Amino acid sequence: MPIRQLSETMINQIAAGEVIERPASVVKELVENALDAGASRVEIVTAGGGLNLIRVTDDGSGIPERELALAIARHCTSKLTEDINDIRSLGFRGEALPSIGSVSRLSIRSRTAASDSAAEIGIEGGRVLPVRPAAANRGTTVEVRDLFFATPARLKFMKGERAESSATSDVVKRIAIAFPAVRFTLAGSDRSMLELPAADDSAAGSLRRVAQVMGADFPDNSIAIDATRDGVHLTGHVSIPSFTRANALQQYAYVNGRPVRDKLIAGAIRGAYADVLPRDRHAVTVLFLTLDPAIVDVNVHPAKADVRFRDPGLVRGLIVGAIRQALADAGVRAATTGAAGMMAAFRPGATSYGHGSPANGHRSYDAAYRASVFDPARSSQRPLDMGFEGADFEQRGLRENEQAAFDAGPLASADARAGQDEAAETLLGAVLGAARAQVHENYIVAQTRDSLIIVDQHAAHERLVYEALKNALHSRPVPSQMLLLPEIIDLPEEDAERLALHSETLARFGLGIERFGPGAVAVRETPSMLGETNVQQLVRDLADEIADNDTVDTLKERLDKIAATMACHGSVRSGRLLKAEEMNALLRQMEATPGSGTCNHGRPTYIELKLADIERLFGRR
Image (cartoon, rainbow, N blue to C red; front, top):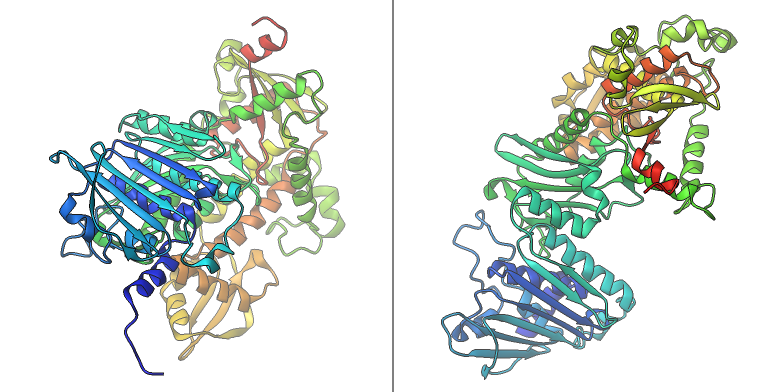
């Protein structure tokens, strides 16, 4: 078959296959155009989930009549200079409007501030209609009807009206977070209405917009982020560990104001929360990265949702470090939703688990706990150099007088204070207050000046022991064991080279690795804590992670998991009676330990019930 030039309509339809995936993609492109035009108000109307109608109206600068024909031509844009590395707008490729017009009936009506009247142009399935006069206010209205009528095969892949409307709503919310000074409204054919009033560009205004999108609970359960490293500035808010969601849909990321779905950023968030969340829970985050446009490539895909950083390790390290530091600085905090659940449980007719049935969550925690059953007699994860063997470990290692082997040890201004005869008033002013009682031999009841605190003693001490073990583990090189015969692993040359470049870091974690000719590495030592392990798989996993993120966190996470298991079996057990001094010492240690609001499995370690809530239960308010 001879080579021939494709028609302009066919070219646009091919481009539409990449840019216009569903109605939400059309809304995204049109709203981005409105914001690039300086709009302070954007109104979106849809029908049939967006397949029948999408109308986007803005009060931006408008398009001059003489430029309307160019606006719908491929690769025509007002947003890009001669430098492809200096992209400071949301749109820049000049593909969206002609792509949309090739698969729908599109009309654009616009008026500039300098013009006395508006003008309109239309496209039907790629056929351009002539420009004609029209009546309109300042700004632009883009109307898309019968989406994909020109490519009916695409219609077969569309979901139901509700699903498409939900996807459109998510797109609008995601964009709106980055532009708090712009008013957004979204109306659908089911009479649903999303209205996001304009705020201001201050930090408070930005947080108000975040609350409009993510719910009023988020600000009270979040921590502010503000960090800079080598010219990359990170701001935003992240949730405290006890405030989570079942999926990652409420993790919003922006690069120079552009909403992105980037796996590096998502991976960094997971890494930052790695040992404070359950495996099936996700943090709630809003992160803004600001950096020189020259060191980030946003021209990766026509949809512009993916980005590539020149130094991905820098960006990942900044996100992980900033979130972990913020969590540590925030101290011990309980989610406000915990008190709400408790209040619901007390109401007449409530189930034993309250509204939302967290019983499923408790069952998942219990299942996770049972799945990590620890056999100290045979496990390679047994504590090192403690002299416990076989059944004697169970008889000695977990006896009351042997708990010191697992003790987190004294923390600065914690145990020393607890041993003193502090005034009750001083204790009441502490974050976790003064211990008043122990109920069911597992829960510590404490009192502050304005709240009641209930602490799970096992979960709380588990976190304290875990943090102490981690600090000991990472403050010095990890003990290693020499392999009788080196393990030779064949790898692609680039993977072998990456591993060799990280050999010093790997050695600190007990993995001795060196080059062994072209496309191969030799492993001579492995971390003692790992015991018998699949060295081949470990090294290949590390090579994959270094290729993706330029880190060796896989090995660190395996060691941390062992520390978590040791902490679980070395902490204060449920059913152990504690003296008042011991309970207060535990509370003071919790206040001094980062991340103590959740245990190693992600369960909350305590719940706070405000005095006002208690009074409300008794009808005093």
